[in-house]
Length: 219
Image 1 (cartoon, rainbow, N blue to C red):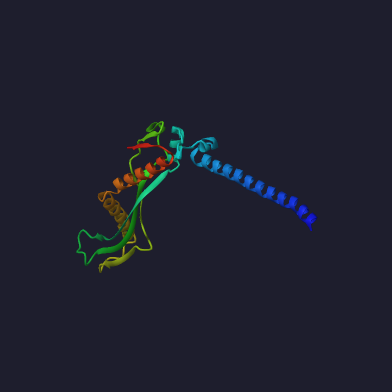
Image 2 (cartoon, rainbow, N blue to C red):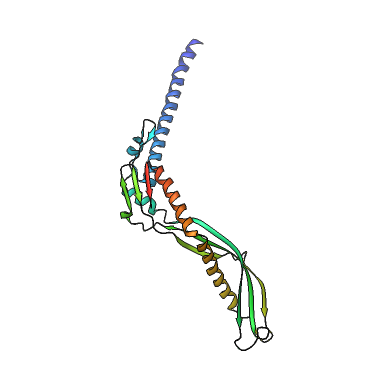
């Protein structure tokens, strides 16, 4: 029985060696994968990543071109959505006859959404300044990206057509256009652009802190 035990020992040793070799290869591949992912997303090389951790703190030196590229990749950064429900009216009247004889009136129940944010796709590189662990950025002004009605929730509430008139096929389209104009105006009055700018600054501030900057100035 003792010779069998001695013969089995080299086999166990080889299995342990193969197992450890597999773990080592897996670790190396994982480091390469992480380094490639960081390089693709931030432009930082693997050596920068390995040298980023000193004394338990992250120290990543990110250059100005990298910061500009990362911010531009956000493109049309949507930061606020404003929704409204209201009733919009529209009518066509006759200049010579009273409404009950010649007129067309429509009430539209609308549900709309206004989306605002900041367009960062063409951020000028001159608006980004990097000095060591300090970054300063001048952001473009917030703008409204879209105003639209939700057709699934928008409907004609009522329509009154006079005795000597027929329904105007263009009236509903005109009321919808007016509804979009009123929705956008309501969003502007409620400060949608200020909210969009504040939210954009908060988003970019967090991103830049994640890059390792200790002082972030966003204007």
